[in-house]
Amino acid sequence: MNETCENIIDEIYKTIEKRQKEQPEGSYVCRILNDEKGINKILEKVGEECTETILAVKDGKKEEIIYETSDLIFHLLLMLFECGVKPEEIEEELKRRHG
Image (cartoon, rainbow, N blue to C red; front, side):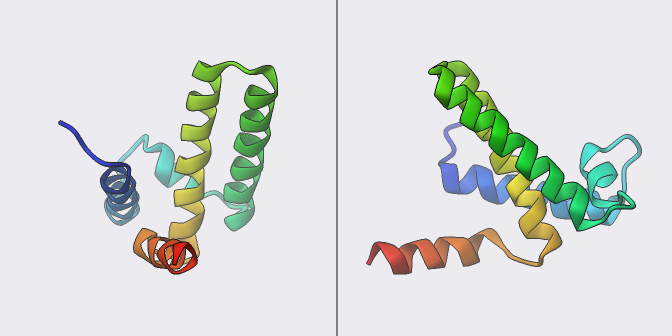
């Protein structure tokens, strides 16, 4: 399966939507989205993953950069979902900026 970055981001976002709707037991997505801290829990995770990404870049370890950036993108998708922002809206803004 050769998916583009756009497709995998859409798939992950759809999975987040599905998990929130179905509430499967043991779901990490549900645990974060349903945390009593609300959006603050998600923002804590975004901040944590951002810091870990920065440190991986600082250390120059490509594998860690890839791993931590993937965590950061995932948690950004959780944040966007919670805020009602869809990936295609981000895509449109990026296209607008790209000209």
